[in-house]
Length: 298
Image (tube, rainbow, N blue to C red; front, side):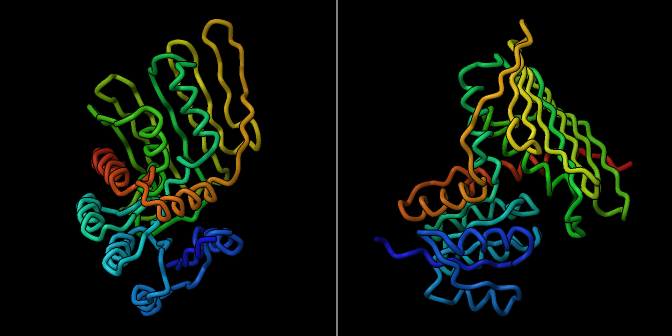
């Protein structure tokens, strides 16, 4: 049996704790260290016993920590958003190439079994040619003070859509942001996006909302599909335009974060390019940059 990969986690907040839980009983990996301070992180970078580093710290710290980890010869799994500036994404791409190590972004919805099934159905033409997409991402928290809600949450919707329908080439954006706590970052944002192929995308994102809503509708010329991640089983519903028949597929699923972690380990073991590699992360960062720069505060 191959020796277990030794992981370190930087940041033991909400996501850090979930990664720690999964690593605690993983057959191919073990949690060797946890770092919550700069001094502890530096010790992890210098340790010859660490193969992989998971970065689950606040978004503005991702770039510096990921770069340091790559320079130290470690494989990196960084939570979303990958970075908070487009220039940082471009520099990380160069650093990955230089280091010859893997960097994977934690866009966990691309490892969601229901999203994988949705992609198969779209590729089959189940709902026909797409016309519009609407996504809502509302949740109680955590509410962050170092980034806006759109950059923090819409990374999910954009990564899902890039995975489902291919490169998103934006022609026009009209958006509004509302800042309730301060004037620096938005607490709610609404963006209408027109792609070059005339597909219309509407994304609404907000935090500090009492009820969690993670809902997406995709409409085509043959029918539509609803993805609702808050429902335990009926996460996907397909509706035909002609007869109105609702199809609710049965999907064998497991925790998306576990699928994500397994994929990362497989890529490290077998020198594969991750589905959500640094190139994917850079494309999503570019989309976030384009859209957020066109969101007007009111």
